[in-house]
Amino acid sequence: MPPSLVDFLLNTRNVLKADLFSIFLPTGQTLNVTEGQFDVTVPLGTPGWSGPTTTFYSVLYGKWTRGAITSEASHNLTSNTMALTLAPRVGVTYPGLPIGMLNAAINGLFDASPLYCYTAYMPIGGYGDVSAGIETKFFGTITKLTNVSRITAEFECADPFFLLNLKIPTRLLQTNCPWSFGDSNCNPPGGAAAFTQTFTASGTSTQWIVNPTSITGNLDVAGYYTQGIITCLTGSNAGLSNTVKAHGASAPVLYMMNKWLLPVNAGDTFSVLAGCDKTLSTCINKFNNAIHHAGMPFIPVPTQAL
Image (cartoon, rainbow, N blue to C red; front, side):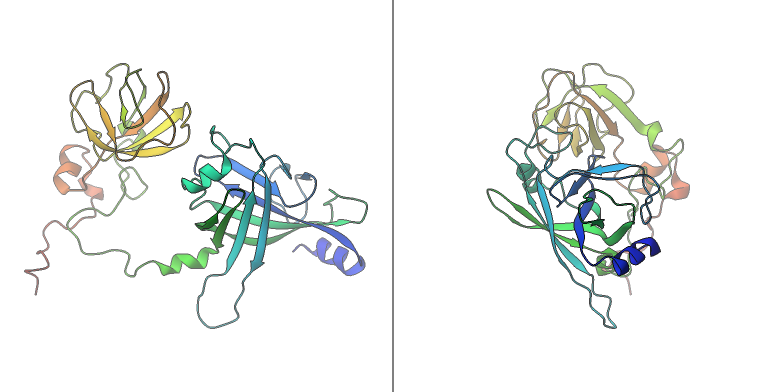
């Protein structure tokens, strides 16, 4: 809480309050909403606020409210949590996609979304006046959908301490490489972009199969994109990603690991990242990246190790 806001609250007996939420969605969109009755705009330079001028919407994306924020004073590293509830308006769609907010929640499109919760305190008769400053109330991640009904969706949010629930040690002695292909640890020659192909889907594509209109790059090399990541750039599924289950030699055909959320139409554009089976031979022969291979192919199998 900035000093100017502390002074304002110390010297003002009655104030108006509104919680503000910034939710960073997996599609790359940011959802800025408020529990308040009206929209709240936070200008650039507002004390306690480090972002650009931002408007938090009260009804555009439905009604968003939070529960109590747990905070335990103890010697353990228990994660603090916050409940977040969405009550969408009829006809409101998920940002960037033509599906409803509740449908998006059921399909996991809020999962693992980072979010900030702020509180704006405003003078009586001056709703929207946040010149005194903004309080950062909570920062964390939407960890799960706890309940969904015909009119609401309820999420549980946890602060960064929940990451301490990861298994230790995080690195295991294993034959295959633990990195995700193209990430900062893998760092293949030329970066991930050198192994990414962009294409347009043909009319024979479905939610399970994506066929390019033309064969370019390595699309004609069977298996090259098997286990790769395909991302929809334009169309109904824009911003969503999927895993390539198999890359066939004819057509060519990219078979999806999971069904796309919405239909794939002719003209939709996609990018696909090469697949990696994480073996040393693939790292050498396919990507010329053995220097960054973090697997241990020469350790004995568990049944033989002493």
